[in-house]
Image (cartoon, rainbow, N blue to C red):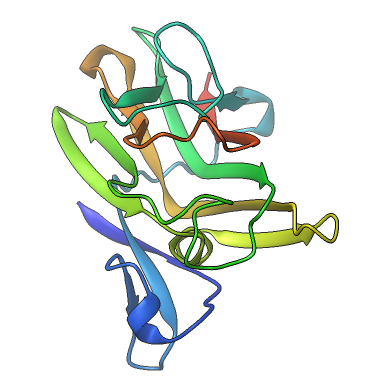
Length: 200
């Protein structure tokens, strides 16, 4: 198991960073992500099938603006039995009115429990990060912010690109999971998706 790192954009002081973000010897802020390193060389381009899909509940919903304060709500990306996928990117997009502070989450006050991101690979579950504020969202993901009007209705979009693709095996029950643990029903729009490929 190797550690893959992703450069992230930083807002605020070092003390504002989520614990997953560390500074290297050169002062660069980096996000450490567990991943399974797999080398894929000399595979013709027409032997790839690209994958873009949302994380979803067991009922098929892709909308993360749910109430998970009582019972956490899992949004999973899983691999069909018999298949092996390689995940390269985890992305998100959020739009909400009142997104006027890094101390908030969208337009809400900072989350109590946070949005948890975890993955299960080869029978082992890894916690990737927990995000409670816009600052943590921005520093964890490479995030762009678009302000839409004077009420500061902002669209935040970003992604983590894994240096080494995460190898997910359907027969092993591997998954990538986003867990909502707070009441996010008032968030205007919130989705997350994965991108990767399958070798045919």
